Amino acid sequence: MRSFFADINLKVFNVQPVEIMKRAFYVPVFAILGFLLLSIQSNATEAYPSNWFVNMKYNKVQVLLRSADADFSKATIAINYPGVKVQKIHHFENGHYIAVDIEIGATAKPGNVDFKITTSGKTNHFIWPLLSRRKNRGIDFAQGLTAADLIYFLMPDRFSNGDSTNDKIPGLKDQSLNRSEIFLRHGGDLQGVANHLDYMQKLGVTSLWMTPVVENNMPDRTEHGYAATNNYKTETRFGGDKAYLALSDSLHKRGMKLIQDIVYNHFGRFHFLVQDAPDKNWLHQWPTYTQTHYREQAIFDPYHSAADAKRMIDGWFTTEMPDINHEHPMVEKYLTQNAIWSVETFGVDAFRVDTYKYCNVDVMNRLNKALLDEYPKIFTFGECWVDGVASQAYYVENNYNLPFKSNLKSTSDFSLLFGGILPALNEPNGWSTGIIKLYNTLSADFLYKQANNNVTFLDNHDMTRIHSSLGESIAKTKMAYAWLYTCRGIPQLYYGSEILMKGISNPDGWVRLDFPGGWDGDKKNAFTETGLSNDEADFLHYVQALGAYRTKSSALKTGNMMQYIPEDGLYVYFRYDNKQSVMIVMNTDTKTRNVNMSNYAERTSAYKGGKEIISGNQIGATFSMPAMSMQVIELIK
Image (cartoon, rainbow, N blue to C red; front, side, top):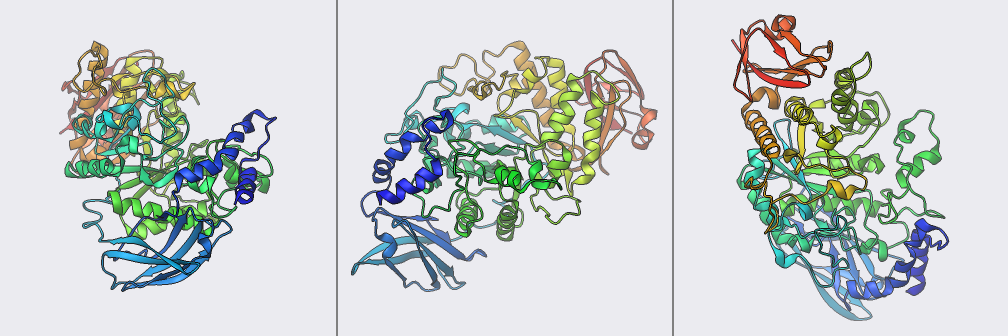
């Protein structure tokens, strides 16, 4: 047993103590056996998935059984349960594992499936629950997302502490709890999130996305959640499965939706499938530690090098996040089953997939299809942090004539952020600079099948907050939010930016600070507006007004869009349907600009003026726009 673990981990972690990046791996190799004894108690058996459901389309399930017994893989397995058949049994190089392929027939009823496990003439029983399905899929859960939705994105550890009893959990590696340190845990949890759904709804929010809530039993930097150590267990410091299910129920009772952040690209270094892998091929391994180069062009470049393409996909994201081998059929089943199990168990409505561009896209297509086959309305958007619209469109449903055709519904629209709204508000206007970049980037929407599916945003947990990106200009930040709430796509807010929270992402901890008022004793409380400055309170009210209007505006939620070529820094676009027309005017110039509605007759000829949605002021057929300002005008006949 020692030689197997030493072999696999020396290859996976490639211990090279003379090199700084690789020294981080040295200690875990020698700590593995102790970790295993703690993580799988004597002769205990664990199953992944931990249960399944009757009447599923995905009814051929691979159950990965794990035991502390080093000879467990030599065992025989028998099941005698009506409607459930064993199709195949897989044994592994690592004696701790057996995989059992079962088929759950249409006649199978909910109950406890008895796995009879016989080793050396001794039979043990492992009970595996077979549960009823959730009711009303596509209505009460698995609803998907549309452009009518508005997403609020938060980090549970940094949003609100609703249950201080789970701040520290004995036995977990990271026992930190210090709100004054940006890289330590702060104590936020799912109860804290549930306590403040009213606040989100006042912003116009319909859907909640949180950084991953699965267990991250890593030694440090556990606040972000992207280094999973057990995909079938909700982080106990967040309140565990019970709190996650309760939050899901609370959201759905309000007519809101739950988006789960899921990671297919990598595990955390202390995941049991890293520390105690069934075989050596569950992870991508290299002769020496090899990191991805992060350049997605190597995948679709017609002149690309195969070596570059391999390193892009198979290289590790970081030393703490070993790269998963999607080409392994059992790994693909493990990831697919976990996603389906999550929807059925917790009532997930949509997925955000982390580091999507680093995944094997063919495997992702099959995984996406399995989800859609089971839940026709499910919606998945990927994190495709790429360079330009052409690259971004490759990863989603597009109009390209290429051998690979993605079935991913949506992506976070990085191109529209970095190639659109940021230069529009930060750059001087010229032939190819400033506001024209926003126009040009949107004009490339013809590459997408459904550009309206893209998730638009101004900032997130990995990048500088929008108020800081715009030089802490309140005028510019208001324009950014007005654009976000009125442009095509599904808008996403990042917690705290609606009260002008600042932060530069170097390091990222500065853009992941606590939401004021989320902890007892906070002097500033954004939920009650206690202690907010005049600017912060005014800005919050501004965003709430935008949210209130969008909530009732069919044109902004599901309408068409028409944009006009910017002139002298003045950019005009319309959202419209057969019920409503909204004119949005953005002046990015340094001077006041006059607007004449007759210049936009295609959309204004039937109207005599309009009403500005924030101030309520009546707008005539001609009006002036101050420098660096924006107006959202509902047109009136």
